Amino acid sequence: MHDYNMEKQHKLGKLHALERICMLLDEDSFREIGSGITNLEDAFNIKKGQFPYDGVITGYGTIGGQKVVIYSEDFTVIGGTLGKQHGFKIANAIKMAIESRCPVIGINDSGGARIQEGVNALAGYGEIFYYNTMASGYIPQISIIAGNCAGGAVYSPGITDFIFVIDDISQMFVTGPKVIKSVTNEDITADALGGASVHASQSGVAHFHMPGERECFKKVRELISIIPPCYQDGYIHTSSPELVKYNDDLTFNEDLAHIIPEQSNQSYDIHDVIAGIVDEGSFLEVQEEFARNVVVGFGRIKGVAIGIIADQPKFMAGVLDCDSSDKAARFIRYCDAFNLPILTLTDVPGFLPGKEQEYKGIIRHGAKLLYAYSEATTIKINIILRKAYGGAYIAMSSKHLRADFVYAWPTAEIAVMGAEGAADILYGKKMKDMSPEEKAAFRQEKIEEYNEKFMNPSIAAMNGYVDEIIKPEATRERIYGDILILSDKRALDGVHKKHGNIPL
View (cartoon, helix red, strand yellow):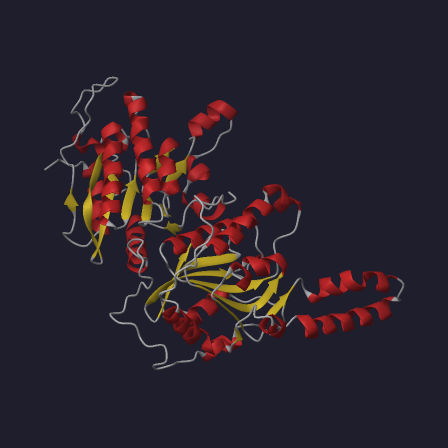
């Protein structure tokens, strides 16, 4: 048994690498692997065999009975720095998770590359990145930033599926404050540069933002309990021992009938709609603080795990912009990789107009969303709640991108644009010479005419772009039946090619 320097970590207000593992995993389930491995070569001022387990603890265990592979960097051993052996231990852990078809969890707390070992340290990182990429889409990869994570080290979490950050503990950046000071002469604190809230709300690098380590581990356990443990061909991932028949014991949720406001330009909270569809308390939101105009997360319907992508009218009226397109597209690809059914809740007035968005590349970013939905072959169900305008209507899991079922609530408005804009464009010339009173009355008349003729779901339904116009209160039952009927869905073969080129 090694002597662990717990005190040293506690003084920094952090838990020790081993404590973290034990707190995260089921009691007594951890089995260490590679505890005797140590640094091999004599390096710059370092003797071989000097660092026990080379500063990282690796092994396996269970979370809620589900097997996982885990590694945890030990900051008390030469600052948790990554030498060759340390890197190879982590790479081997990921490889073991791939072979065992189970999630891998990495707890990062490291001063970065072990400079004394030179290019050997970089070789360690390279191995990790390679296995991260191999594992991607085959097993879930979770990164917990429980200390420093800087330089090359950030790119391993960057490839993984979910990154957890913790207040006052997490620091993540490619180049730290000292380097920035020497290169650009800018003064910035580590927290302002790459603290938890920066990555949760500004950069979108983090997926979960937790106040402390204990809460963080609790949330990781919750995530593990809902996501499939690996890619597999059977489609339905469920918590219940057997699936309920879709025509048994039907319940209708009356609350859903009253969420959409009378006025089409009034906002509401999309979380209320989600809560009315999923099993109580099952919604687990991802990237809650980033690009809040779209909401993504996992939930269950009668025990069946699903992914949800929903426009959020409460923020920026639910428009799509660069960040929300990125956030939704990556989440869609995650769900598709693990065959989770994707439920889309659409209420979108369009892509965000303006110079700033065009300069940021809204064309490139919006294209990712179109690509992700089109490419996904998992079950795709779309409910158009209210607005579905223009290119954004197409982008939000429309029939044209091969959604399996598209439903509309009676409040749906499916059109090229809003009635006001349409009236101004179609009748602009005609209204030029009218008096203000005449113009206002004429414009109102045309808006109402356009609303009546084009802004309801029946035209889309007549064309087969909407499968059914359904009552809001029947939504949950409808989705559940669809998931069961589609549970053996297989994609029709597309063109034979190596792979497409997703816009990035």
